[in-house]
Structure formats: structure tokens, C-alpha cells
Length: 383
Image (cartoon, rainbow, N blue to C red):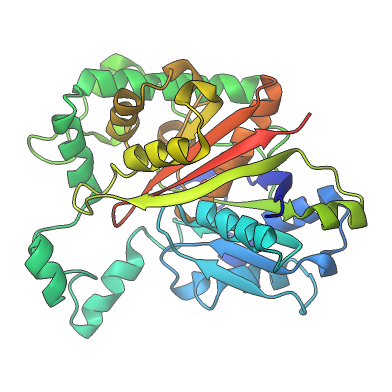
């Protein structure tokens, strides 16, 4: 099997809901990351074999294959195709997986993989609600096989976050301390310039605008999202806008185009778990990836796990035994936002840069996803 090399990984700054990116058309937002990536590599864009982009809620301006639209909006050759992937919150991580697998299989030489989401323009779950006009209350209820297996109750990430907190005995205070750490780490990372190498600006906008100035006292005063829940808005990822892009290449392409790899893809996989608990799949997915590679969690020098909710991360840490000081060291989605379709490749860019910063060898990325699935990516830094 051939190697899949990581040439570069970039992202836009993340805009908060209604913020600096809210009025940017999703295709232009996706184009910003693609253009930044291609310009930094000095690669002829005609050499790209495919553009694989993640996006959720693909209606309106995010419909019609946003991967292809973003590439064309960037002004690049019509000869290069594109395809849009929806694995919910892990969509752009899955885009990277598909790109790596294409290269490893020998069917492609150069792939642009990433994602885009404008959650200000198209609200979260808009695609799930779009069916109501046609008589479908949800994507699940009404399917005989689903109803027989899982019932007709609400399928909700908010319920999932609460169930996880209860099952793993994670207190609200525990989650608030993690959320405070996430915000403090993110603000420090911005001040220290840790995101500068991975960010490509959108016009004059170049600094993440989601991190909050908060305290444990402020968080303690918030009302829960539902009666009896331990979850508040402060313990959840932020609705936001952004895009991300990664350049992957084969060894042939590296030599042919004079590219300099920064890392190689060591492992890609995905696993599933209970779709009602929904957000627990990173636990079995991580265990599976480590078993397949023969590595341990201690071998990972840097870890990124998406902070969909604080309970997700804390349950994962309990189950895997990961060192919290290696996890989301520059903050996570609670502070920096979670532009659904873009998050996977966004976190990938952060993982790559931090792995280089600490002179580490292995980095691990995992994301919980709607439907009860999770992806795991392990990269090895190249010196």
C-alpha cells in the first residue's frame, strides 16, 4: 500500500453566529480555504484529482455539491471534479479519510480534502426539518425498522450529552471546569499566535472570534438546556461559520511536483455505537484504532477530540486514560466553535501544527457524530 502524505492543512478563522462570516456565501467561504491551501503549496491546481468536502444541512446555498461549487468559486479548473460528504460532525474528517484512501489505493495522486459550514445562514438541523413540509417530522421516526429497534422518542444530541454525563457520573462542576480550561487555552493560543500558521484570512477577518471571557461563577448561574439536565450552553460547542482544507499527495506527486510533506497518514478508521447515546462512539473508535495500529494512548503526543459537549470529552478521557494535558491543548469547540462540516479538517490543521510545535511523533483526532459514529485519524509527523 502506498503512503498518503500531508502537504499542508489550513482553515479560515471561525466566526461566531451572526458574526464576521455570517454574510459570506458558503461557496465563497469554502473557496477561501481552498485558495489559501493551493497558493501556499505553489501547486498547479490542475494537478488535483478530486476535491472532497464535508458539509451538513446541504440545502440552499450549501446544496448542489458544495465541494464542486467552492472549487469553481475559487477560480480553479473546471476539469477538477468535487464531491460532498456528510458524516455529520465528522464530515471533513471523513473527507480526509476518503482522500487518503484514494491515494493509498493508487487511484489518485493529489486530493484536496476539507469542509465548509455557514451555520448563521443555514441553521443547524435545517435539512432534518426540511422534510416537515412533505409530511416527515424527522429523518428517523416513521421508518418501521427504526421504530421497532429504537422507538419513536426524540433523537437529540442534547439528550445524549445529558445521558453521558449521568452514565459516567460527570458533574456539572467537572464540565464547567473543562469549559473554563477550553476558553482559557483558546484565548492564550490566540495571543501566543499558535493558530497563525493554520489560518488563512477571509478578507480582513483573520482572528477566531468565539472564545469567551467567563468564570466558574458565571457558568454556575446559567439555566440548564432542559429541566433536570446538567448541560448548559456554556458546556456545548458554539454555533459558528468557517471552512478548512487539507492537501494530500502520493509519493509520486511529492517527487513530481516538488512538494514537501509535513506528515503522513498513519491510520484512518470509523466505528459505530448506540445512536441514541449518539456521542459515545469516539470511545470504541479510539480503542479500535489503537488495537489496529499496535499503539497506545500514551504514544499520542497531541490529541484533538471535538468538544461537542464537555461530557463527551470527559467520558472519553475516563475510558481511554488519556492525559488531559495532551487533549485540546489550544482549546476546543466549546471555545473556538464547531462549524459542523468544516470541523474535522479544522481540527486536523490544529493537530498538525501542534504536533510540530512540541516536536512530537504521533497525533490523534477523533470526532463524535450524529447517528452514533466516530472517525479516528492518526498522523505521524515527518522531520
